[in-house]
Image (cartoon, rainbow over all chains, first blue to last red; front, side, top):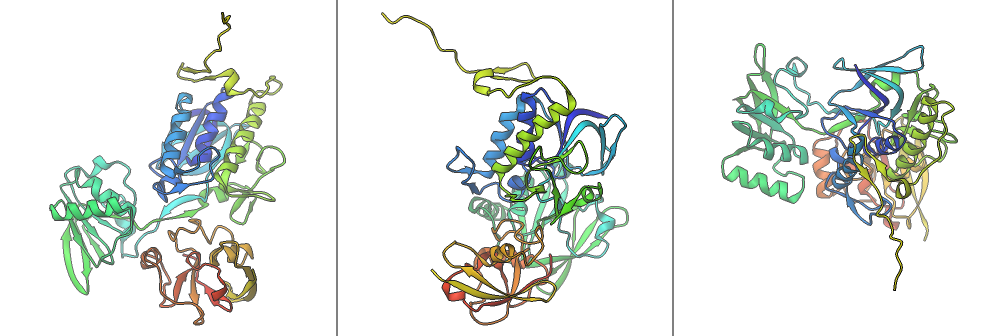
Length: 350
Length: 109
């Protein structure tokens, strides 16, 4: 059982920043995310695109913002349960919660902060007969651990950044990488497209376009796939098939937790602390709604900060605290590090 | 700057005639959201980067060209319910030229 003060659901910018604000109040955080990496939408949808409305950053790439947030919170040693989805929640008599993921990982927390953004990113699955049978038996929708594909034959399908980037990365890991796409054109960052071109020429990636995977074969585990290449059918032996057709966000299991939902978002008390209709469960960032709600990262940061203050009071009833400024008080990490402003000198000038 | 009038058929088949400003750098997806003609969370999911196809529309008259930009074309190749007259609402800017445009919002992806 993982023990924590605040269990954050969603490792996007709002969830990550909540770790910092909680840390200042000596509250420990653990984060669950359905994706294998942190950053939420910023990492999954647009890591190489700029954001222009983060205060203090005239321009910052989404991927860099995630990197910076991780750098900012690392001294508070957040725990992570990645590539798992929060499935069920149980409220204990002492007001604490147990959240269990789809993989059975249990988390015990004093408060829950849902920072789930647009929801759980679920893979868009291609319509191929029996594909469900082969899931985790050769069909993978995410690359969670590249080592899984060490010295294996793999086929990736898709025409976007994920398909390109994983083809490039896995060309050094797998024994054989084939990239299949329905059309000849790929859409991604220029350097990714050029790199795939180069790897195709050097024989490290095989490209089959325009083509589609139409069948899967194998008794216990995937052994081969059927490809429709411009009307001509052929069979290709492979150990893994990785369709990367993008992800669709769904509110998922959280929708069944008894929370008040409006317009696919969770209603919260914005006059106070972003708490939901269930005492001890908060919703922050794009996942919540209230009159005047704006789905902006900067609003998520604000909501995370107020949520943490409320959790402090919930966990430490009656324990006095006043808001402190990091410039004055510095930042004491849970790892023993301390950041503080350089002291001014008091010295006579002669 | 004057408004333009658009005729938008929602996902339940109801036709709405709406006005949209041409000076706010808006697009068709944003107009649909502004008038709440599709449920929040089911449209404009990627924010308008032509990366999700949740704002796919069918163009019903010839006020605009059916020519898609490369990003839009790539996205529609991977989308569902795509027809010859499919466009992504987020890639159609609200300009004086589109006055009278008639579209139908495609089913949810």
